Length: 387
Image (cartoon, rainbow, N blue to C red):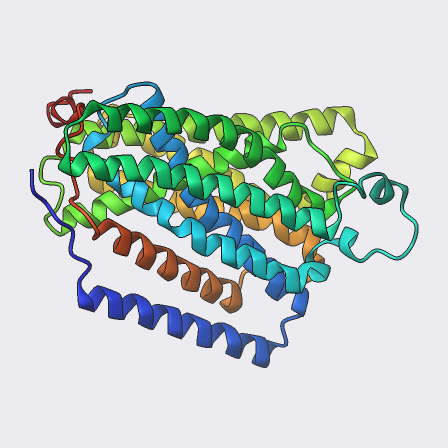
């Protein structure tokens, strides 16, 4: 199979124009509306987290199917691999937070004595914060690069050693990711409200990452299919991706409910302090988050026929993708910006800037090789796959 994705000039120009227009709009909204510094930096953190999550979730998808020796995904495996190309850019964007760390994290600049912050000082201090960040990204980038390198080798060689190496790196990634996705979420999100803690917060963030990456992958496939690529992709592949989106949306809801219900039932001030302002001051967004991320995929994909309709699945995926951006907004904004939080022109323009950049990098990475790994030992199974 010889099928090459071409990143056309008009697509590149369009994405660059979107980035330029979004950046200009964001700057103008800051000048005209007088948006505060904390809101600017909180939006940078929000979109760093969201689009980083798309890359990490894509790598998680690749690693899981390889370790489990699944073959159905083989025809589309280069798409999630291209999504991981954003990781080095995400690293640079996260390092930029150094210049706005005082506007996001209270522990970075507190002056009055606070026994809770003092007790966490060995972990929550600026040097160690960025040392951990470098460690996380080094592992994520190295392991995804190793998996991709062996995939590229299967383009020109049928040697089974490349498949076996890729599987080994996938297993290492799963262990490393399982640990660091929790610790990084403690660092970058949970420490915004340093008095609050949740023992399942890391899992909650991981599932949100994975569901959002599945939603983007479905839209990615829809874009390519609409332009004549992936001719051998079957409705069975769409069905399985829709099934994963459906199942893990329910799992996300389980994590959301477990955290909310246990904190409500325990009624401890250090725990309820997280939910009380979100329920009182951001009630609409709070329930919108639950409605979009649970009710839409649940009722939209519960029927077998709906899971095999590519256009319908793409619509649900687009709504869920927006829903998980809202989920991150609710995790980050109330603790950083408080009552001045909002979803306006500035938020939309910054998100469009990141989205265009993410798509540009993913498309460029996908165009650097054949769409289908022709020497993958599971290719024949994928081409004739029936779910």
